Amino acid sequence: MADTDPNDLLQQISDNTAKALRYSRLRFLATWLALGLLAILTCVALIAAGENARTNLDQTDDIAQVANDNASEAKESTDDVVRYLKGEQGIPGVPGANGVDGTPGQPSSEPGPTGKDGPKGDTGAMGPIGPTGPQGAAGTVTTSGGTGSEGNTGSTGPKGDTGPAGAKGDTGEAGPAGTDGKDGAAGPQGPPGVTPPINSTVAIASSANDPNEPKQVTAQCASGRVTGGGFALAPSDPGIIVTASAPNGNGWNVQAEELSLPAATNWQLLTFAVCVG
Figure (tube, helix red, strand yellow):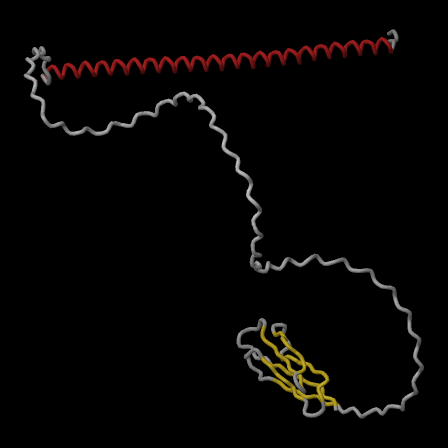
């Protein structure tokens, strides 16, 4: 077996591939031509069917119109026959001759009543403009009168409304800073202070333990002066809020009320004041 040249083998493969491509292209083109022809034939068939349906519809309308006309003519003929059989109306007679005119009446001595006014006629067209008349004679020129005396001064008019305030002016520039003054001389040392004794007490007051609200309690200092205070809630529930906690005279006042508690829940407010002196 002779050796095959690779170039010849490649050339054969290329030729076969080209033939296959040409065949595929021809089949693709033939397929599209067939589809186009089928679409054209379908459109022609649809158009022909539409024209045929329109023709049949026109023919049906014509037949219906002819039938309607025939029915109307038949009804008229039947009505004529029925009228003839019933003898409803005879044949009109020949008109008679005109009678002799009567003698004219004598004219009345009194005029007849005035007839009603006829409708108002349309407005006639505007007539042509007449010729311009002659110009009148010029009037005499009178001499100018002398200047009259000066009139009296009129009364003072009412005071006018106050005008709107003017716009605020721009802020002026800041002036220069002044020089620092000299330090004064140190004063003499004072005597040592005396520490007074501190005597502090706590005053406590509480409300009733019940569901009533709001509650207000003031703890009063029996001696000394109040320097502070506070409160406590029993139970300590977030459903109770304190609306006021402040000094009141020589005591401490607290107010509280319910925010969200179960119905009929007992609670109590305790207030304390710190007294010094």
